[in-house]
Image (tube, rainbow, N blue to C red):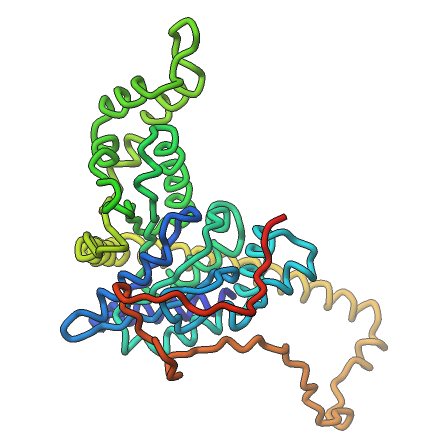
Length: 382
């Protein structure tokens, strides 16, 4: 997003805050492949529709490779980017194709923000469903562009989805926490750990490990493979012990909720955490965004003034040395041919399906049926 767009968006957010107008909260769902992000998005969509009165969210699907979703998105990256063609054109595999498709989509993300802001008065929540390639948000430029652009316009919270049954091993738990830590410090946004699939395995053990260092140490010591043949702790065991100490401070500033995307348990608690994160955004993130913007504008102004001053000095010296050339360097209005030069960039038209009517616009997750994908050719690895 350009500096001008970021400045305008930030000003709009601050203006809305001052006037007391409640802007919708953007929820960016991030997590490993298979963690249940799309099912979670469907469940919170279902919950918001079930409220009295209903509060339908504005949903964006940013996964270009998903075959089908259990919800209908207002903006779908698949309407703009053909993932199969991207793979073929750039000679990429599945993961590279997803990253490249999202990079291409983010070049026009200002159009997405324009559509979202037009709906800001009619919705309370904007939900972004993202691909399972978590490296998008740990080092890829597209992830930073998306989070920064959305957060500069709307109160934003990151929901990091964790597959609870697969996190019972201390090593897997630690891996998930390190990813969460990386994303938190990269986005610097309000952050909620969402332990999904609690209908399969309750998340109490994870909360205990986060709150009690000794409990995690005990679980680590009792796990198979943590000692060598001589009974000494292995390198990985020692490393995880050290990392758990490092992350102890990180845990203190995290909000963790347990949910089931199948039964809907914990969804209300999740939205309570989202509302608390709104206050955190307005109190901490927005002032920091303002300070960063002012510092950036001051730096840019200094560079522009310095460049202009240098240019004017060079121009004055050049005119002194070449008076004839300086006299000939005049604007001739009669030379203008009136051609405006229609050289506007060809824009990718982002599609907003909010006003479209289609069967199953709102899908009750308890009555989902498989969609008929016959005839669709989706690339497979290998």
